[in-house]
Length: 124
Image 1: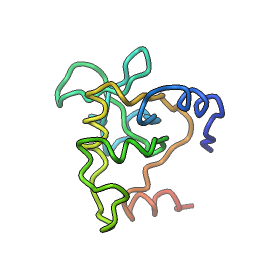
Image 2: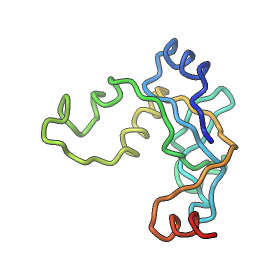
Image 3: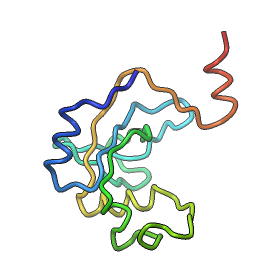
Image 4: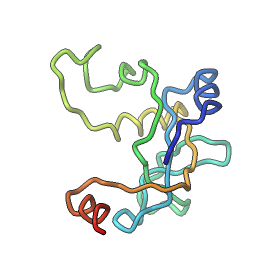
């Protein structure tokens, strides 16, 4: 039931951030979460075991083209080889520069990352 809020898109366009993520409360299979969230809306690359609360990345996000061409991006401009590269290291590097904002989403959300979770979701 997620709908990209128009005001979130407008705020992102007006900002200098490279990405905006929607984080969710941690599901059972990811109790430690992925990223932190500051009080002023920045996504935080917190180290494992950090005392501050972490949330799970929902995979809902807005990105600027520049995010994928940042200096530490592992792909050449336009990714002509079609390389599959992990997103998390790029997000963490941008977070370390304060270039990623985030919002906590508390609506209905399911991580359908495995066939088992998809089956659970589709079960009567």
